[in-house]
Length: 211
Ligand code: TYD
Image 1 (tube, helix red, strand yellow):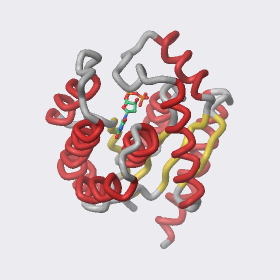
Image 2 (tube, rainbow, N blue to C red):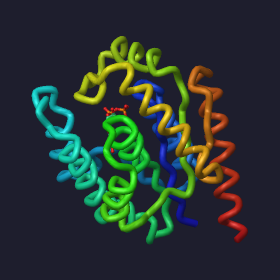
Image 3 (cartoon, rainbow, N blue to C red):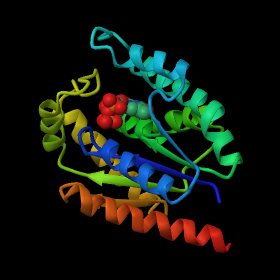
């Protein structure tokens, strides 16, 4: 009954709030849930997160950035995600490999095929069963981020143009693999978004239990 679910979306789309609510609801129903975030989720990954997000690291090359996100993910897959799925548990992850394709390839302009190879290597080809995309206007996302007062990192600091390319990238990825993605209008209320997420997760869990 293992299930690997990821959440993607522009910065400030509310992914983190939704993941927390989903995690609490599934745990209350007695499911074995592991909730993770990228980059990070392991002690090594958290150290990489500091380097890759530090505002003073302005000189970081796009390739170095891509490999650092990949390195954090390789550690997360091996140390946390694979063992949890092997135990038959549920993994919820705030961002995963799709973020690298969206930000480092569509956003930064790194070659698509090369980035896909790096992703495959880092993840040992492990793909999510289900991915939610919380869709909001990128400018609105950035504004929410500023108002929210949380971490303001090197990626938030990119131009609006960059964030638009990222969103267009996501939309292309969704169109290429529609069976894995569920797109949700991120301007709805927290409760409405959560209800939709829960319905979709229940469907998947129901299918697994009976298969
Ligand atoms: P984070 O503070 O976790 O914010 P968010 O709530 O937006 O997820 O920051 C993650 C940032 O790192 C976000 O701007 C996207 C970026 N990122 C990449 O560029 N590539 C990646 O592979 C990942 C995982 C994240």
